[in-house]
Length: 466
Ligand SMILES: Nc1ncnc2c1ncn2[C@@H]1O[C@H](COP(=O)(O)OP(=O)(O)OP(=O)(O)O)[C@@H](O)[C@H]1O
Ligand SMILES: [Zn+2]
Image (cartoon, rainbow, N blue to C red; front, side):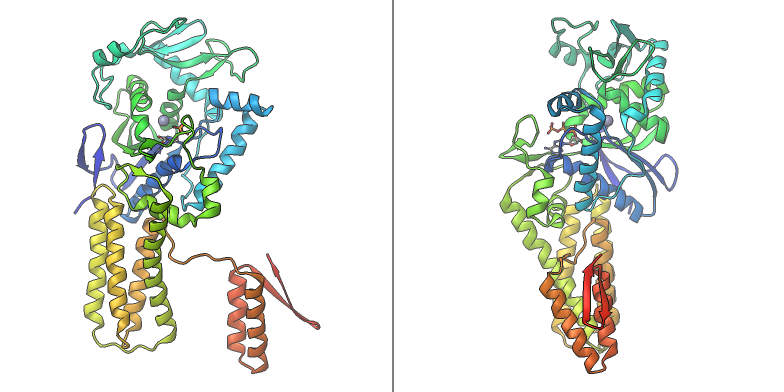
């Protein structure tokens, strides 16, 4: 069986075959860092983190790049409102982005380039487009000449004539065609700006991704991803810029995640109907939030509600409980079983089913259903008193392996309360009095793993959190 991916470019599932065997070059459009991210913005972060994890699980060497848009109109406006400058706003929200998505189990990309550190490459890219006749300068701005690029509209499956009839030149526009878009914008008085052959200014939004993908991954990449709303115009424009310059397909597979809606309307900052990750993770276990996203196929919409989150919690707990019970049995019981081979085979089949589901365009919803089946079987197995330690360990190992591919951990990380710590210390004191040093050491190690250090003093045991 091989992995198939739904490609927005061809509107069908295609067998995944990377440009270079065993390697995957992947670029995902990242956030504009002028605010905390909402749960909708978290979806591409979680979806493409899972895509990356699964590709790695399947043995690919993945090079994953995701940008930060750290200068644009919204950042300039926010800086003004807060009475500070653009780099300060960007730094603050890049940090919060990392904190929020890290809580959701998202691993950092191999690199997160920023617009402000890619200026020479962006300016060079635009200059070459002007040289090749794909772009023109007008009053300090530079525009991409859309009609000069043949394939315009191929990603969003729209003809250039239809697009043109729907667009019109606004009053005051200096571009020649309504579909032309800005590659470079001249600076207004007092705005953050960079020197360029066209005077002081800053890049338009689309050009940054073309320049960064080329700089870090080369002219052609394997997977380009982002939210569905980026298909047009952002990704269409990226294709026009990159393919006009590089004369090579920008990406082989274009992947887009569906929306998180609220009351069937896209969650977005402009509509004001958003829930911030920053606030949500104070109330909900972030793993439950991740599970809730994984429970739906990435191309389908999700209508966000607290009830849906609560049911995700119940579902995740079913898997966690089975996993916890297996671990407990492994700790307390001897190796007693006889039909281990049959069970080992059964467990192996769960792994194959999980892979089959994920190979089908990363169908995490069905992959989770496999985890449920496995939890049910584990519970059946635990009903027998004669369990084999090898089978228990195999169940546990596979739960950890497969949950790990989805970025989930199955143990709830509860913070120990002071009373819990003191109770454990008391138990350790008793163990020592009874000369049960093995148990006493075990408790010390358990606390150390939770970053709690014990100090034996003449006045008794003292403890502190590290
Ligand atoms: N409701 C949503 N559901 C799924 N993905 C979304 C949603 N809203 C934004 N995204 C995605 O989040 C990523 C970050 O985008 P960006 O920072 O530009 O946010 P945005 O599109 O400006 O958000 P908003 O629409 O709230 O203003 C993009 O890939 C975008 O497609
Ligand atoms: Zn982009």
